[in-house]
Image (cartoon, rainbow, N blue to C red):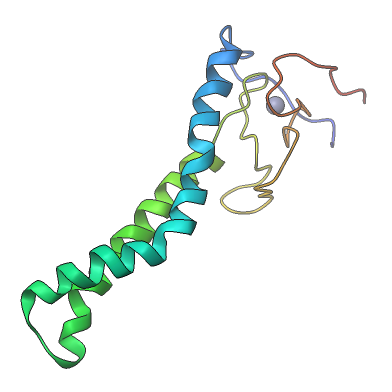
Length: 127
Ligand SMILES: [Zn+2]
């Protein structure tokens, strides 16, 4: 905590619990993607790729494209989750820098104001 945090206009949110609930719904999706990549490859990507009856390296083209799409979907959903705005201060909950800098994907407190995860009110940081 460096003491230069501030509230964005419109924050704190009036319906903080709804913001957390929406965020909680996204929580399991990246885990499901990580667990599901091998079954997706075995039961979807390679069978779909075999439709094209190609041999050699060309046989890997369709499954490779499907797997790329799979990982782009994973990155998009995980990026959306990690861009969650803190319901109290309106800053990014998991980041305190531009882009991927200052990212802590396991943060239990807002990286800006210190609001604990899943809470709507709490002690303001004392500077
Ligand atoms: Zn905050």
